[in-house]
Amino acid sequence: MWRSLASNVMSLMVVALFLFGGVLLWGQTQYTSDGPLEAAICLRVERGSNMTRVSEDLAEQGAVSSPAIFRLGAKYGEKVNLLKAGSYLVTSGASMAEITDQITRGGASTCGTEIVYRVGVTRVLAEVRELDPATSRFVERAEFQPGVEEVPAEYSRVRDQADTRFRIALAEGVTSWQVVEALKSMDVLVGDPGPRPDEGALAPDSYEVRPGTARADILADMTARQNDRIQAVWAQRSDRAAVTTPEDMLILASIIEKETGVARERRQVASVFTNRINRGMRLQTDPTVIYGVTQGEGVLGRGLRQSELRRATPWNTYVIDGLPPTPIANPGLASLEAAVDPDETDFIFFVADGTGGHAFAETLAEHNENVARWRQIERDRNNN
Image (tube, rainbow, N blue to C red; front, side, top):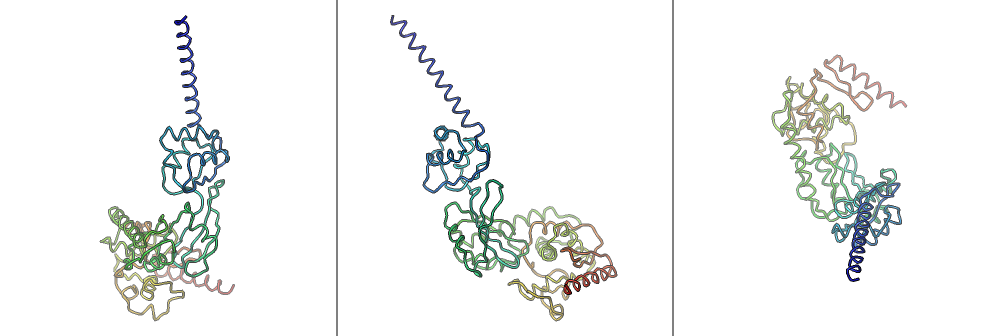
C-alpha cells in the first residue's frame, strides 16, 4: 500500500514538473516571440514609474499579450530595477524581451518631443518637434528665434519634461562668433562659453545636449570633433591637393564652404582654387572680402562695395596673394575632403548660374559669357 502511494505521489510530481516546465517554456516563448502590436506607439515612462505600471500601459496600448509574463520576464532577466525614464518608440511586432531591453538599457529617448536649436548662417532657430509613431516623422509644434522673438508657451511646457530631448544642429559655414552667440541664447545651457574658439575650429554637426550642460563643454566637444576630422582628412589627401599643411586645408575648405551650398560642386570649386594657387593667380573670392569687413561677426546683409573690394585687409584675396591667414568660417567634412581631393579640371573661373549653382569656365572669354548670362538673369528677376 505504501509502495503504491509513494509511486502515485512520484508520478504526480513528475506530471507536475512536466506541466511546470511546459508552462515555463510557453511563457518564455510568449516573452521572446513577436508581440501583438499592429502599429508603432510611443511609450512614455515617467520618472519614478515601475514595471507594473509600464506593463499595464503596454497592455492597454496592445503592445503585450500578458502584463504578468512581461513582469516575470523582466524579473527573470534581473531588469526590474533598471527601468529608465524616457519616451521609447515601440515598433509593430516588438517582443516583450525587445521592449524590456529598450526601456532598461538607457540612453536617449527614441520618440516623444525634442527641441532642436538650429544654428544657421543667417539666424538661430529653436524648433519644438514631436515624433509621430505612425509615420516615424516629426511634427512641428512651435518655433522661434531665441533672444529675438517671444518664447512660445509650448516651448516652456516641454522644456522641463523629463523625457524631452535637446539637440544643437550646427550648420556648415557658420562662424565661431555666431556659434558662441547662439549658445548664449539657449536657456537650457549654463556657464560662460569662455574665449571665442579660433575660426574653423568647430565641427558643423548634430550634438545631443542635456539641460544644465556647460557651454564651454559643448565648444570643447565641437573642437575635439573638428580636430579628429582634420587629422583623418589630411591623412587621405590626394596628389592633386595644392595645400601643403592641415592649416591651409582648413582655410581653403572654409572658402569652399562659403562659395557653394551645392554638394556636387564642392570638388569643382576646389579645383578652381587649386588651379589658381598652382598658377600663382589670386583667389579673388568675395566671401574672404566679406570676412575682412565683418570679422565673422554677423551677416553683411548687402552687396560688396567697390571700395571694399579694393580695401586692403588680411583676408581680401583680390588684394593679397595666396590664402588668407585664417579660415573665414567653420567648414563641414565634405568641404575639408574637397580641399585635399579636388576634381581634376582646367577651370579657373566660376559665377552663379541662376539655379543656386555655378557655371565654370576655363577661359576668360567663356567666363565673360557666363557673367553676362548671370547679369541678364538678375535683370529679369528685378523686373518681375
